[in-house]
Length: 174
Image (cartoon, rainbow, N blue to C red; front, side, top):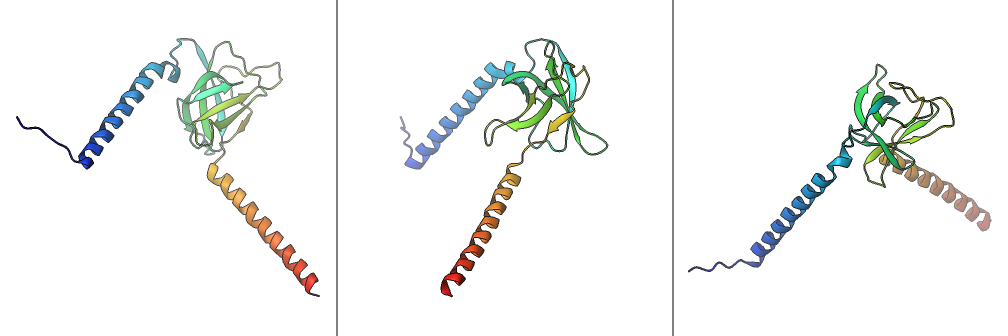
């Protein structure tokens, strides 16, 4: 009988393959057990409202709609209007009435997390009707633009402080 032996490199590749297969199996098991929370599996009824944004970077159909930290619906549609603004169609659970002066914002779960729509309720006693639209929206914050702003502010402050240091040095040399 022939006994197989593996080199260290082959053993390493075998271990990596086993770990990768285990990770895929865990991901599949997680998806199967949590897919109810990824869709409208509670068989409730929903009504639609629209929210119009200038940019929706990273927000996808199927993403959550939340109010006060609770899931109240899903994004079910996305299209462009005639002015090239994104119209996101939201399914909201029946029984949840959104004041008509509420705002819809695109936010993310953490620094690099998934995007979702957060609804900030207003104080009006009138509600957005079925098929209605949010009057106030806030677009997605783009991380690259935010970093560019921070860097440019830092550069401007550095130039300002360097100019002040040069002026002080001239006064001291006199």
